Length: 392
Image (cartoon, rainbow, N blue to C red; front, side, top):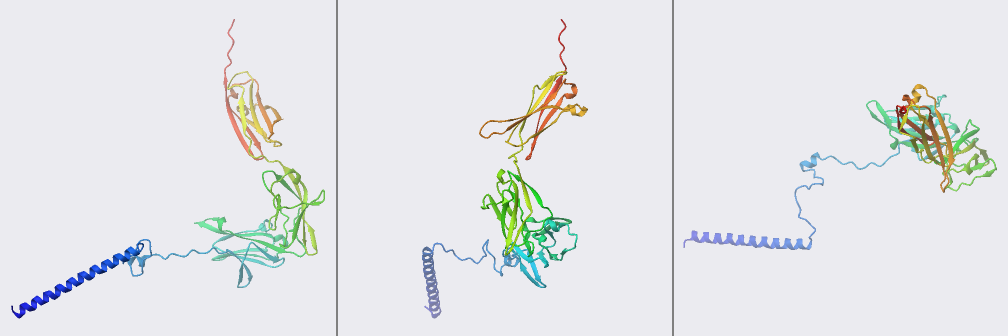
């Protein structure tokens, strides 16, 4: 064997040995990796590709085009009060200002619209000034008085082309008290104010004061007693006044409020409460004619019956074909109580048409109405020729 052949054989032996070592090493690594996966079954193999649903890195093409997600912005108060030039403060539900001082409110939005107490809606003195700047609106009220007390509202406007409407959901509101050391109640030109006590609706007595620190009580004029306020039947809110939640007949009469602050004690406008029994729903009339077909010359009776609530008045009106030619309306009206646990009133109106003619053919409509609404029902009457008796 030559030396060249011997060298080639040794070389092949070394390469074969290295290849076997590499195979054994790879088998050991795979076995070890399999054991690790058994110990940690929840762990997944890493991938160099960006996964769907997660942000790609800046090195990937997707990362370059991905839009930035803005963090949710916390709701901020639209309204701020200008204290001095360059000084602002956020407003709460209420703020208090001494009568005579200037009120200046700023509201973010382009544009905005302001709501003010009814007393200021027709400002003839020029004390109220509203200016719209590029990004906010400004309301300024000078020479203020206790009568300016009330709610001030800022409405951001939603505009499409030239059509703009108020965004009530994002309105900013603040109730402003203009404290007057001589007037505890907001002035009123009325000595008496008549208010209906509706059985189906809460009743409010404004009794509006100029200071949130005033102590306010409710009183009856006759007999002269203080009305208890328990928070359930009657409640008080410094911004709204007294609310009678379920009006009843015993709440009727002349009432007034008394406010006291320090040594000052004053009475409000008197409220004359009138009890009105409002119905729970509109009436439900039923109409019926004595015949669907009537011969010419005969009489027609069409009745409209309404079952109503106790002490609730129901008005009944008619529409009939004869109205077009001026045929007068003749009706018979009756109201009778209904016995039973719930009681009620039965109202009936009967339309009388004497000596029917061809013009009386058509639709007869009865409309019943109460304070809650109205409802109409109709029926159709045909007029047929009168059959002459056969000659004897």
